[in-house]
Length: 83
Image (cartoon, rainbow, N blue to C red; front, side, top):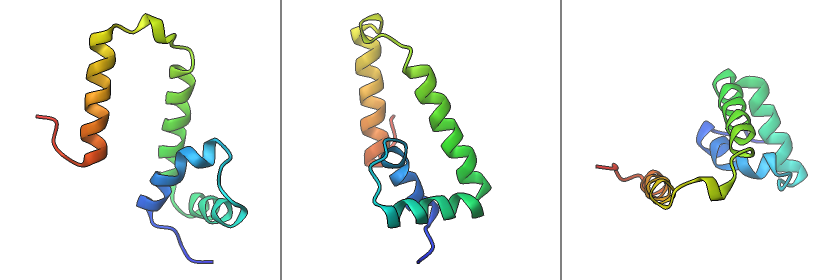
C-alpha cells in the first residue's frame, strides 16, 4: 500500500466523511491519519465545520452572503487570489 500525500488526503476528506471511499482508499486515508498529526487536526476542523454548518438553515443566509461565499469558494478551488 503506497503512502498518501497530505494534498491527496485533503482532496479525499469529503468522500471519507460521507463514506464514499473504497476499502483500499479508506485504509490508506486512515493510515495517513495514524502518521500525520496536522491532517488529524484538519479532519477535526472539517468535522467541526460540518457540525456548525449542519445547523445553519439555508433560508437564513442572505443572497449577498451566499454569493460572497460561492465566489470565495470558486477562487479557492481555482487557486486564484480573491483580490
